[in-house]
Length: 76
Image (tube, rainbow, N blue to C red):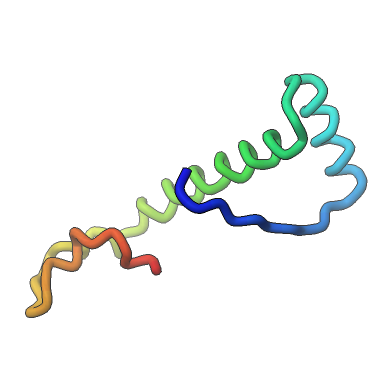
């Protein structure tokens, strides 16, 4: 993992209780359970985004600057 970012949010009591139960059942810390849930969500969302037809145009034209379809920093 490169740079670590800390986030903070609120959840309702029911969700917290469910996460704590998952944590105990899986012998993982609450932090680990939440990190895994976020990673799973991001993976699912990213795969849905990549199905978007707009991504089919990437690399289909050239610019004077450089080949923008090969850049990794386009999402900023």
